[in-house]
Amino acid sequence: MSKLFTPLHIKSVQLNNRITVSPMCQYTSVDGFASDWHLVHLGSRAVGGAGLIISEATAVSPEGRISPHDLGIWKEEHLEKLNQITSFISAQGSVPGIQLAHAGRKASTNVPWEGRGKVAIEDGGWEVVAPSAIAFADNYPMPVALDEKGIQKIISDFTVAASRSLRAGFRVIEIHAAHGYLVHQFLSPLSNHRKDQYGGSFENRIRLLLEIIAGIQTVWPNELPLLVRISATDWAEGGWNIEESVQLAHILKQKGVDLIDVSSGGLVHYQQITIGPAYQLPFASRIRKETGILTGTVGMITTAIQAETILVNGDADMIIMARELLRQPYFALHAAHELHEKVNWPVQYERARF
Image (cartoon, rainbow, N blue to C red; front, side, top):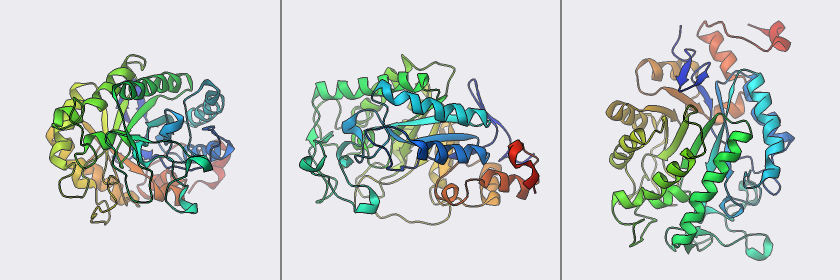
């Protein structure tokens, strides 16, 4: 059997293959509510055979949204539609996962097709928060530095959101600590200039993430997987780097995190990224080999052979795909055919089997 279609067991959850739908913001919510768009978007990837379907960055509070149109899970009323979506995903044999997120200083911004930049408070925006009062860019909001009370609210918001996620039918949680959003802002010295217990040293900068994990673990069953997405490097001098990512991964493994979803960048607008096929794979490979924790890799992975080679070489345990799964919702079915694997198709589609 190919590695790509070898099941992956994480605690009590079995993924039927190693293909995961990466969280991809849809900017299609009103007041945080999922809609039929989300049902079809996520559901079609489950019909297409992906093993794990992770929802887009889902805000743990209204002020944690990237834009006014982000998905949310900050109130009970959000759960009804989310339950419909997770039920459908599960019925197709895929596992529903959720990415819990807070945008920090990158919040209160326009949806991409309306141009990047802040949404003013008078136009429906809101006051944004961050570890330090440093804006992401000139056209982004100036954040307010979080005080102790504000930090405790963040931890509480993630914890309550995790409890709601369980009741919404999700079986995997991923904490978003990447791409320049709030938790990443605390990790990096480029955005965290604090002088208290949450800033300065490596141990202080990772403190918020560890406290969020501890909070979630009070409500999230131990037998269900907990993932963390990180940016392995800021691609900027003086920023968070791969050495710190390896050090963090050692700690996260000890704290009960099951898999590191390894991405990169997003913290500063002046980052210098070297892009190419599977360009982030060396980060996932190094973290996996030096810490022993499961890793997922993402970034310009577009073919079955490419994904299979990554797994066979032992560079990652999971292939996390974004844009290719926007282009090909049924990528997993095509990949199985290419790798000569017999997989279950939806019975409604059996007559189209290769």
